[in-house]
Length: 262
Image (cartoon, rainbow, N blue to C red; front, side, top):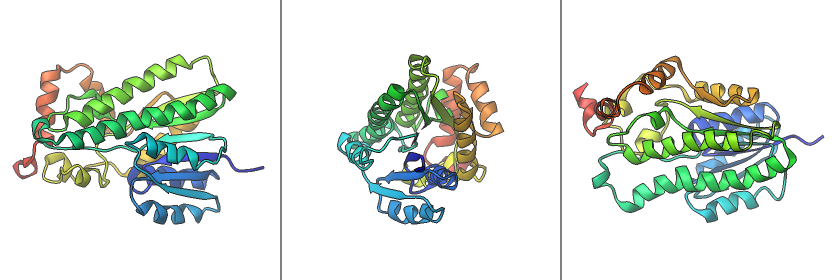
């Protein structure tokens, strides 16, 4: 019998790379996607597990990029989707270029939704499939100096809950939301946040641990997983803390130059 087939987006580094590695270890053929040439080198790593791997360099902030991903499936049934691609952006909102914050919105929300809609339709039609969406505990916190990113993750966290309810009669399809806190990846460099308290922190989560938490929850069909006990505590506290207090706390983590104030 042919292997099952998984799509992992944002798979060149970080959580996505680790998720794709776990999928390959578990015998899934892969379609891996990222917006950088490094995805081809990552694919060679995944092939070491004896599975078929297709790599695609595509900008998932565009519908054309998502269409290129979908075309690369060559009509093959997708058994598992890890919708992990995301983009951050630091600094004050009023100082950000429109093109920069739009790319965050288009990657984290528009491209993700377009991909989910296409993949979930087929899964629901046959009542079989698993989806992991990378949200964030940032979605619970007003993100001063990271406002667009946190807002996009609030959208994704909420959207996943809504879609899960819409398809609840399809018992063979599960949608799991992975919600990590800060993770030791290239995220903060790419978001221009290395001079912030959170960007410079040495207590960020290991992406391999986050991916393993997400994979285990995905396989169990769980609705949510907050990765890491500190993040579980922070998420719980966020639900009962006034928004103004949360925003001020986030400011201390994400304001440019806050790394020097530690």
